[in-house]
Amino acid sequence: MNIGEVAQISEVNSKMIRRYEEQGIIPKAGRSLSGYRQYTENDVHILKFVKKSRELGFSMKDIKQLVSLWRNKNRPSSQVKKIAQKHIEELEKKLNEIESMLSTLNHLVKNCHGDHRPDCPILDELECH
Amino acid sequence: MNIGEVAQISEVNSKMIRRYEEQGIIPKAGRSLSGYRQYTENDVHILKFVKKSRELGFSMKDIKQLVSLWRNKNRPSSQVKKIAQKHIEELEKKLNEIESMLSTLNHLVKNCHGDHRPDCPILDELECH
DNA sequence: ATTTGACCTTCCCTTCAGGGGAAGGTTTAT
DNA sequence: ATAAACCTTCCCCTGAAGGGAAGGTCAAAT
Image (cartoon, rainbow over all chains, first blue to last red; front, side, top):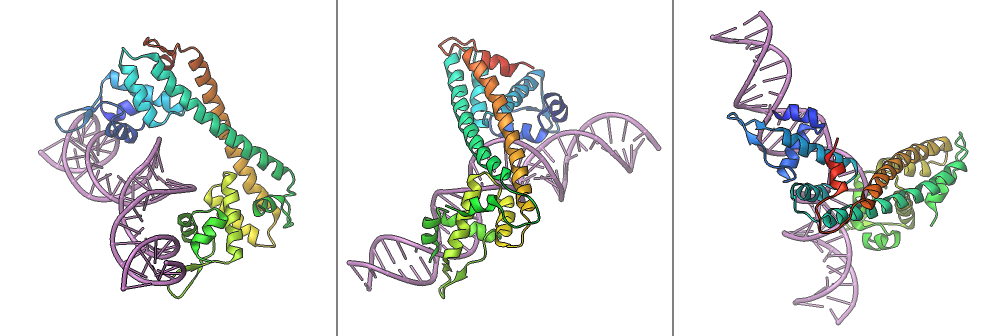
């Protein structure tokens, strides 16, 4: 298969496929005589794995490790779990940050008239401190 | 005041102060004879406003508008409120995405032994679909 | 047999918010 | 006079994704 077909099936953009190859996240594709990248079903499989991992918010660094663990049939599951747990911690941190922002913002927006007048508790809050 | 002092007071890095100036978010600083940027209390005030806005997660694009509205004493508060509401919507979207990732990840991690054995529901999930 | 259009290649630039560090000029304190 | 601390501009890097140029290849229609 050429890169375009694989991109369609795996739902990973050709641009990204080339980049993932460059970053060593997926194996280097074989080439046709004229230099076109050639892919197999297995490559599609890997790309779907990468896509699913991205959807769960893993960084490409994590995904590189996850792919490598996935392909190593002797991996200890502890290593996979560790990566996932660290990721969970980071997501929880982000979650807390966003929740805190939202709580402030919601409060401010509730108290802003939002009309033609210039008085604005949102700007007042940003101004203070 | 020189840039370093202002950076310390406003808690905005000198590097960032220069960039904000370049991006037109804060007014161009005056210069000393030798070319050093010169700041006033008012500049510190603006920088604190910018910093506070960043802490609430606003984009620099939004902040540029917020600063401009803040300095315009005839602004309609509706414009400020609109920016804040749009930002809230985006944060809520992010929040939902993260919550959804976390719910999947927590479930997977719970079911992963995390020992020396290779069996791993996390990898299984990433592999499927 | 040629042309056209769709596909592929590499290369560089852009985004966003932030930072590192080089090379060189200025100020201040010793 | 010199050293340290400060300032200037300039370019590069991060991470994940993508835009688009310039040029090579392939297949189908004319």
